[in-house]
Amino acid sequence: MSDSSSTRPVPRRESPWGTPQEPHRQPKAHRCNDRAEDVIQACFEGNPFKTVPGPFKLFWRCMRSKPGEEPTEPYTYLDLEPPKVEVKLE
Figure 1: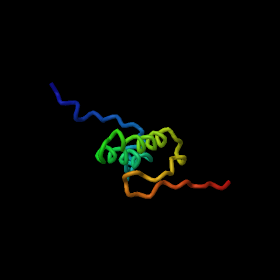
Figure 2: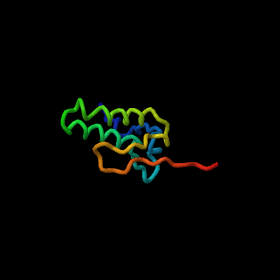
Figure 3: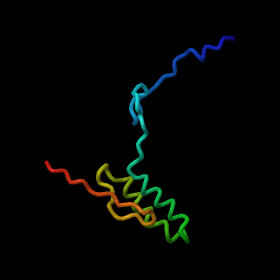
Figure 4: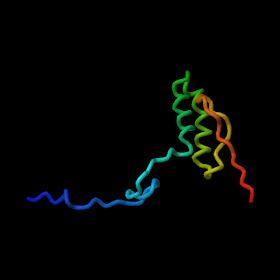
């Protein structure tokens, strides 16, 4: 039996980070990552039944929003600046 699997090219596909042949591909964080981290932090801040619903609602709104229309309310447990709305003048 020959080892032909080592010589066979591995098929590559387009991904959100570009094609595999591009020199400096870097993954980008999802626009709602900070909201998800706020929910995770809320799980460890006392009673989760009281601490999680607020951050989870903001995370859910973020996930359902279109890019650029994320909620601008401040984070509950993360010490980060809330996202700002970019005004596009046309």
